[in-house]
Length: 287
Image 1 (cartoon, helix red, strand yellow):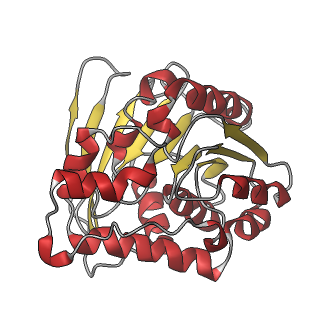
Image 2 (image 1 turned 45 degrees about the horizontal axis):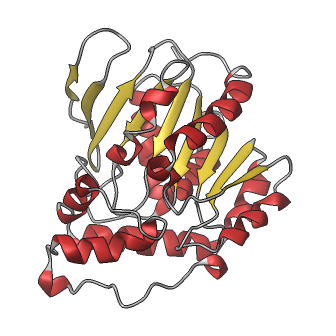
């Protein structure tokens, strides 16, 4: 039996921010909604060792035309660690699908940043009826494109890490010289060592099973790929690997690193809005 959801916290009118906790079978999931509730749904999925807050700068640019839904993946942000500790990407996809069902969402354009793109793809694989189109932001296409980091690993015996350790660990998540936001430092420190490492291992396993362009080709969903050309985690030229997906739109953002959703919100939002405008019109509005 699934327990009831906790009451949402709503600020202001129907288009304001609404926070809620969905009590799912394998752990509570935090959900945040912004924008008109009768507008087309745009679901935003964050990457590993991050949370829904990584989209904060982007959301105000998207809510004039969309009901923007963000979630914290299990073990991240304000979501509980999954019962049994299962972070497998297909399991994450199922949890997201269940969360959207509980919210009454019937169709959504889904955007994933970094490894959030794997959860978005898994959701589309399992629920093609639910996912209208996919947008991937600096999501590595295969492990061949991964740029191995230097000696930045954090000793589990020293967990939770210091601010400086976290900034070193997270530094390649941004273009060179970009200051890692304190909010993200605090969020990562709040995670368990198991959550951080298990989520990353799950992403690697998902990619090793099938490269993402192969999965996306089989899906046949409209695809937008956005990639910062200064990415220091995934080889920027690997964005071209997605061109094998029929109809895929691939855009490099000059001067942006691995996280353009924070480094360059206006250009990132413009690309998402242009893509979403086309494909939201092809699906019924959520009820």
